Amino acid sequence: MEAKILHIVSFDVPYPPDYGGVMDVFYKIRALHEAGVRIKLHSFQYGRRAAAELEKYCSEIHYYPRKKIYTGIVSRVPYIVGSRINPELLERLASDGHPVLFEGLHTCAYLDHPILKSKLKAVRMHNVEWQYYRGLFDHSTETLKTIYYAVESKRLQRYESVLVHADHIFAISKTETEYLESRYPQTSLLFPFHGVSGESAGAGTGKFMLYHGNLSVPENEEAVNWLIQHLETDEDFPMIIAGKKPGQTLKNSINGKSGFRLIENPSAGEMENLIKEAQLHILPAFQSTGVKLKLLRSLFSGRFVLSNPMMLEGTGLEDLCLIFKRPSELNALIKEYQNALYSPDLFSRRAELLKNFDDRKGAEQIIRTLFP
Image (tube, rainbow, N blue to C red; front, side, top):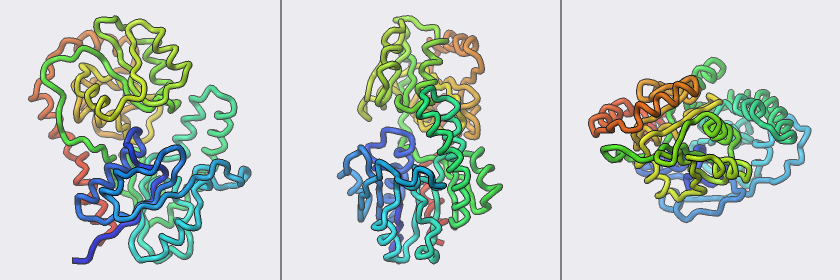
């Protein structure tokens, strides 16, 4: 049988899998490797080190520096794309006939290049990027970042048409599938890869609430500030905020609020334990792009998950969560479920409904599409 070999172009070094975007890339690589695909990984690098762990799953790994300053500041090409242009990448992609999976619009600088015209090319869309950047613009409070987000959103909206050159597009949520499919009919839904093996939370009750995420991302910072403002807490049943790179202002806000505790930059093992041990996962969101990995990880391994409609939009996971729209509803749910028993039977029923989010199924879908 002919070996299945796939080029994957990643926007960032996908290890450690400590934020949503690279989680999807890393666990996708692992699932494809386990399914027998040989992976040639091309990864842009900025602030994250080369990772020996990736050598377990990739037959080749090439790193490319991301440009810190993109000279085309008045260019129509978005910064997240232009800063990832590298001739060596193009040369390596063109050196054989194997298919290419571009991770995110970020990596699509060569999607329409004539030299790659005969190759089978797919794009994994992690967000509808121009909408995501519009959301960052809406929620940003820093003037320079606000200007950047506004300009980048407009550039991304124009640049998105490069997707007509993809043979296939993998969207990450139902809502984004509908949007992309209406413009690019070669789109299909591929749920995010999450790496959870199915281990459930312990039976019984937990002693705290949990919000987790990349705390340097504006939308997550906004969610934490909303919780600080509206959540009713006490020291006997605290709200733990766990995540990487919180800013000093956010740290001060968390540490200054009674009933809140900050766990800064937890290890992967520490985060897994927090997810399994929490009684309640409190997950508000104020931007409905993609499927939040924190939601999937909480549902696969945690007890009760409390979310607002924007967190759940396009996921199809509404029946698995306790939904709140207003702070009063959230605080009422907390009181109701603070001491509720989470049984193995509840997890078994939830696992049955999460079957479509199995990483192995996702790998099989990619293989069917890219190796017809």
